[in-house]
Length: 157
Image 1: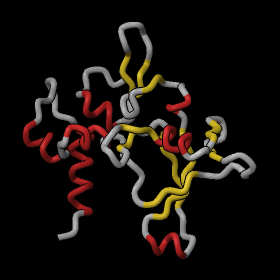
Image 2 (image 1 turned 90 degrees about the vertical axis):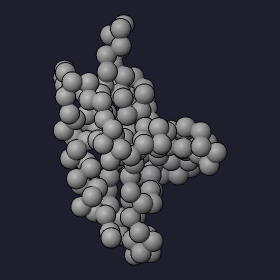
Image 3 (image 1 turned 60 degrees about the horizontal axis):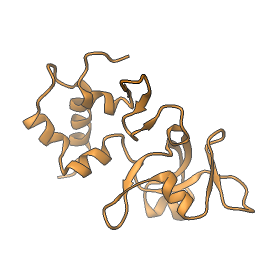
């Protein structure tokens, strides 16, 4: 339990909030803890086109309820995308398959989404902007500052 921490840290920590009725909601995906959306989908990641050509894939995972934006800018989850493409998701194994296929990891191109990506995009905000303008609910967020430092170290000038 991360009592007394800023909500921004709870989001970055993949945490949950307790609703008035006692239900836990996973902040990063806005879905109940323990639901299908809260399960992890196994992912084979190709970070670059060369990785894909050379079959150099990295194993990873993300919540199948991870929120993204479709081409029109509407929120959609990874699970919604899989379902729309005819895939079934097995929350016990974390694998996906279309009818007649062997279950397999989801093939993902590029960086896996971070917990904060959706809310930053939706709010049209940046980590740097939040830190500069931030109202911290009584304490500065440690995790968000660490993520900003990490982002700055990876920046190419």
